[in-house]
Image: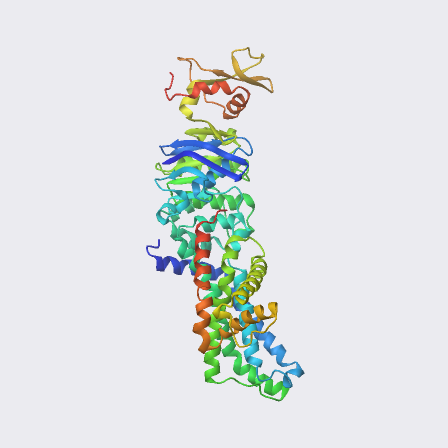
Length: 282
Length: 255
């Protein structure tokens, strides 16, 4: 579905962001795109959406180059930015403008999602709060039923209840053939939804692996005593420690804490070798 | 869902109309008020009574289409609006045309309609308020004004299109500065090399004066139907060049 080969991109001629980036995503599902500030997550989404163009290398999404912005391609790919500025239009007026451009747009699905978000839109969209505008935009994005949905920090601006609503909505309404790439820092809130995780740092892909493999390669343990040297990484938490260990074949599978994993990779990049092959233990 | 370019283009124009109709109608109406106000200035009787309508037609037209030109691609001022426009599933040419038809088609047509609908009122007003009748314009003059009204925005506005595609703010000002610079440079080059398009009867002997004089004369020749072909030979290439380069810039536009 997505293929980046030897992709180069830079904002400034002397400061490259991506140099020879290689990414391949073949299956639909939810991909978590993680990385520190300035790693290039949003830029990568822009490149995939055809909103920025690579300096060199190839970028293919659904078999087409995003920079060509072909009509049939644009009907299948949608990017939702982090900052939303809805127009001074009524919801119905705004929908009547945009929905006809998306052949798979489902009005009933949109209404169902808006209802699940407990949104009541009566006036102009621009008068809604930032969180409410974001909900409308996310509901629209899901109702378009595009094949590739690119979301930049979708849970920013949403309250605690809305975040859990969002997780529930994804589980319930996301079409099976849709690939969703979510760029986020809030891995504890959204991490459980990811089918795959992709981490970029300093313009390079650190790893791209399914959560199934991650869960089989590492395990998380809480303890009251300070973990020993066999812990890859640990940090103090109220009442003890949270530690990340390398899993051995036969170990019970635990759900990985992506935040701990990210910190561990930054501190000990050599553990990436445990993610090199696809083979799942257990 | 729209299956062909015409229905998609019509829908895009409808969206644009929703955003711009207030400024379009508002600026046209505003200039009608300006004309009424101008009628009340007593010096009109003695000075520009004969050219009154022609002058106000040109100024009003430039005001209304200039306003639409200013609003061309305002999306670039907001990252969200830019993203929305660029990723909207429509062909680039459809999006481009839906934008251009406002300064180049709807603005002149709206202004011409307003002007000629209000003209009887202006005539009555001048008679009632000032006690004299402004030269009313007759059929041939009206036809000429309509031709100018439809051509002038395209002729002048096309020069500003590439700037509107590239610049986020003050595109009219920056474009105007660059065009003025090119205008003078082209005049100097043409004068130095004695290019045929610039050999006019009134080219005078002074270097800068001659160069600019030739440019200005060529510019005004545009409005004389007889010499329009000669001027189009020189300027006719610029309009398609500007519009096509604008389209290519739009296709290559990033956020």
